[in-house]
Image 1 (cartoon, rainbow, N blue to C red):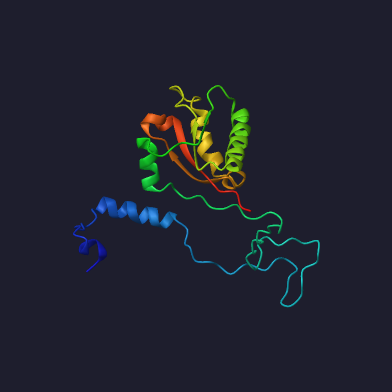
Image 2: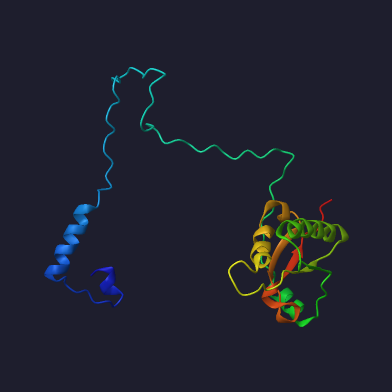
Length: 188
């Protein structure tokens, strides 16, 4: 019994027209079997190629180099979603928001710099949760740039050093046009 039959699907036979089409399609698709590489001109068994000759295809797959991280630049920590209870308390107003940043009227470059400075200063001040207001943007293609960009920025290593996680804010705090950002404690 095939997997399709086990799942309750019924198989049907192909019509002559469908079978002919299938045969044509399968003939036009190249096979996936690897062919032995043809020797490059001048190459014989055991003799290396001259330095000036270039191989069309490497004989062994190239290993990607491991990412080297200097000992003075620790890896940025991963992001984690806000806990359900914390988000509920924030939405209901029973958990205080330690600071707010409104990015209305900022250009993309200004907003990036302001957000990074704001998060670092909030981290130093010991803030736990901050609200970043991006705005919902206007209807159209080019509007809502910050609304799309800020979540991407918060995932960057420079921001992850100050951010534990983030989620869209509750309706009372701006809904889709704002983010709750949980700030990472200062180590030390």
